[in-house]
Length: 141
Length: 111
Image 1 (cartoon, rainbow over the protein chains, first blue to last red):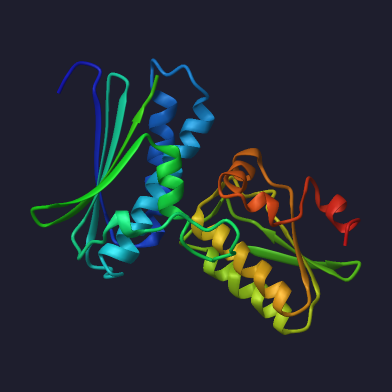
Image 2 (tube, rainbow over the protein chains, first blue to last red; image 1 turned 45 degrees about the horizontal axis):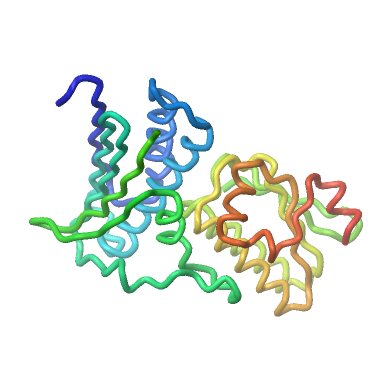
């Protein structure tokens, strides 16, 4: 690891009760970034949100709600680049087939990926050896 | 989830006494709002003063409540949004859908 690099590696059970724990870790990281000059409270909220949405996505759509599976999250900050990877061990889905929400129609669901894409600079979802990873990047300067 | 309700001027106010309204707990709010409209209540105010964080599931539960109101010829309004919570309504354009008031009393004056 490089000097001043932060990496947080977490595994939690595939259950929504752990969302607040994961979100809080994201908020705490935002508040600790030494060089960040933007609005920390906003960054903290955004990291809380993308971590929450990505974990819900893994629980509901990839790990198919199996409470015995795990969600693995790696948060890395190196220089001005923040990368969040959320691994699932399920069937996965095609992120490119998820449509943007139709703002004229009131749907209960379908805003999560849109919110992640709006708040991060790049988002991709791909297969890895024993599952999938949702990778989200943000430039912090 | 901790929900407190009271009725004032024929409006049922639901105070969401949670820091987070997310995929873990928002289903309960959705069911409570549905129950109120199915019971015949017409005016529901959801007060979010204590909610510091909302995700897409929390927003979805409120959208569900809004649609429930329409289908029962009722009204659902929101009050006391914290600024970061309000910014999530703006991101998803839902601030154009809901009537949002800065305080409980202002909302009550507008039913």
